[in-house]
Length: 255
Image 1 (tube, rainbow, N blue to C red):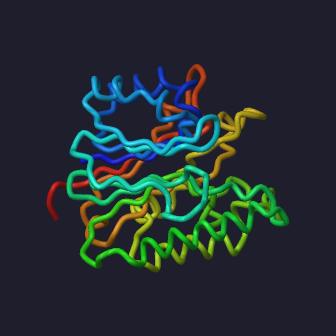
Image 2: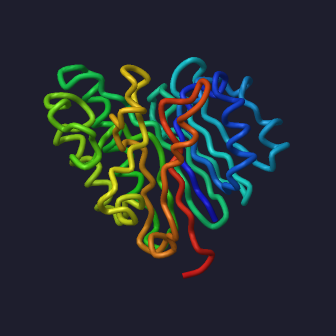
């Protein structure tokens, strides 16, 4: 089984790229962020033609998260059950896995109210994950807008005093892992930066100026099933790509 996470940066703008990727990559579950679509515009029929059931939590021109699955899709949940109007998390049961697609708030700046919103949002996610059954097989994927360590940043000095690398943000990621989760890419590739995002500006992709902010967190048992984790850099190349590349984890059927 293959599970991927991908911030597509507008499913409307990126649909030809997403369609091609789904046809050529043989991925079973795709956790998608920044669809930037309403549910009415979401391509349910096109995905069905490709063999995927889909669930979407849309918000129009901002945010938006989705799950594509060809191994079943049930028990869909949207949001945290509170009054937060932003479409940033969706969960479902897919092929024996509980999965979540997460689009963590950016934070903007350390003195911006959006930064506190980001930390509060991550704490709500931690509470959700801490309350799960101990035997639940789970994959939590998405754009976390946090580079967990300096290895995940092309130049740590360039980000001093900025979001994405602050200690409270990194502490929030450690708190998620403390609920019994493993950072699949870092476990499988302990010394590889595995960047998943590159700014559109300044030739950042060509220069290797990236960040690893797209994560796949899995429970201990699922971590034992991991065969491979990779960043699909080819999806970041070519015409009109997202600024993020998909991160893909391949799992054995059995331990």
